[in-house]
Amino acid sequence: MLIAPGSNFTRQSLELARLLGAELIDVERKIFPDGEMYVRLKSLTGGAETVIVANSMYPNQDSSLLETLLLLNAAQKNGAKSIILVTPYLAYMRQDKIFLQGEPVSAEVVLNILSHGIKKGVVVDVHNPSLLEGKPWINLLVSDILVEGALKHVSKPVVIAPDKGALERAKYAAAKHGLDFDYLIKERDRVTGEVSIKPRSISVENRDVVIVDDIISTGGTLAEAARFLISQGARRVVVAATHGLLVGGALRKIRDAGISRVVLADTLGLIHEDPILEYVNIAPRLREAVEEVLRR
Ligand code: R5P
Image 1 (tube, rainbow, N blue to C red):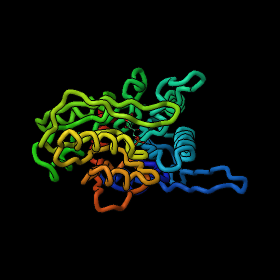
Image 2 (image 1 turned 120 degrees about the horizontal axis):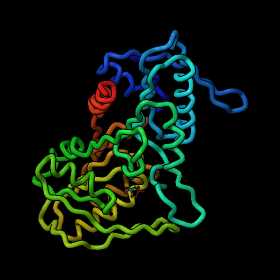
Image 3 (image 1 turned 90 degrees about the vertical axis):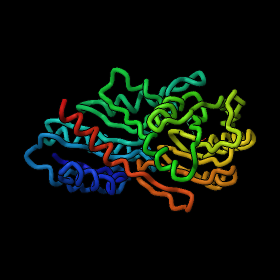
Image 4 (image 1 turned 45 degrees about the vertical axis):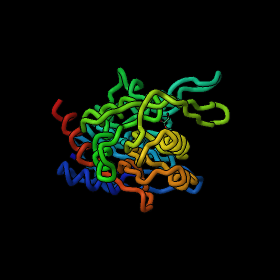
């Protein structure tokens, strides 16, 4: 088995190759003088049974999407008999429906173009898992191992999803650890992007809280949720989130809102260095998923 690592997943691909006993393909990359991208799977000679194309789509979403498509095509055209695509973070998944008249369903576009010619795609905690129905994809939930990391910093917490959409991942983690769970009612203004939280009948008074979410982008959702929970009497608020994009001043916003710890999955092409952050290695879960695909 061979792994073709994308630029955003080279470090994690090494670990995945070690766990799977696979070999890394030597990938040549360059940018032509006019700005176009070139890739070549240098050591893919004579075909292979299975090639895993592994990449993450953050940062540089657009170029990593294109790079992934080029790697897939290179594997297909150079004799791979079966291709498994491992993309722990898929970009554009939050535009999963038409919110305002005239918009595209970007998530559908991305999933459709990535699905051609693959045996299976493996994604980690996709924003809306129903998008994968009828498509050759596996969605891996990792909120259980993130909450496990968070449990070192709190005692008998309640697991809270900041909105109803995140409820399943919160419920999954809570069930694995025998914890209570609930969700908040969040509303986002589609035009201004402003988020507001409405109270729900949930008692966090004198309790520690682990907020579980899929993505931290600007940190606005978590900051609002934490402020609300603290106003309701929550003792300590920590976060277990899968994809920590942490754009702009997200970390400052999170800290200012009273969040004391953030546990993230190592799904991206970057690691943010900050004392309140810790990362969980998801390579063992990716290995399990790939082995499961190979068994089928
Ligand atoms: C929204 O539905 C997602 O699950 C996240 O809560 C959201 O994308 C986080 O974005 P931000 O950090 O910018 O509030």
